[in-house]
Image (tube, rainbow, N blue to C red):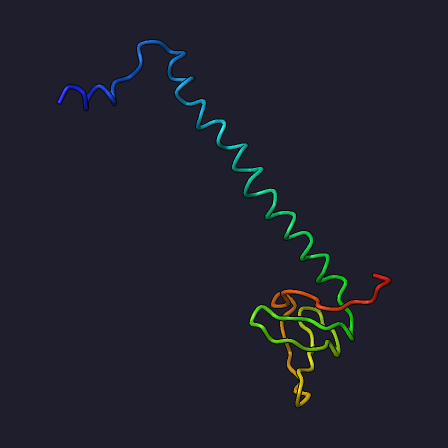
Amino acid sequence: MAIGLAIFAAPASGSGSFIGMLPILLLIPVMYFVMIMPQQKRQKKWQQMLSSIKPGDKVTTAGGVRGTILSLKDDSVIVKVAPDGIKMEVAKNAIASVTTQDAAS
């Protein structure tokens, strides 16, 4: 029983507590570079893609619907879906990727 209580005992010196916290403090920058920074890069790239879409671009939505953009609105787009030419209004945030764009852009 004494061994189990020894785990929770405070260290004798003040510097021992800092050394004990060092791995946790080092974990914060590592988590930033491994998780947060790549997510921010993906988010920025996705926002640039959304701002550069134009009529005629072929897009894929988050739901897997593929079509061609007919027109743009403030927060939505009109997409023409093959084979029957159905027109759908889709939120811009639902666009997952642009499958074709001009070579100039």
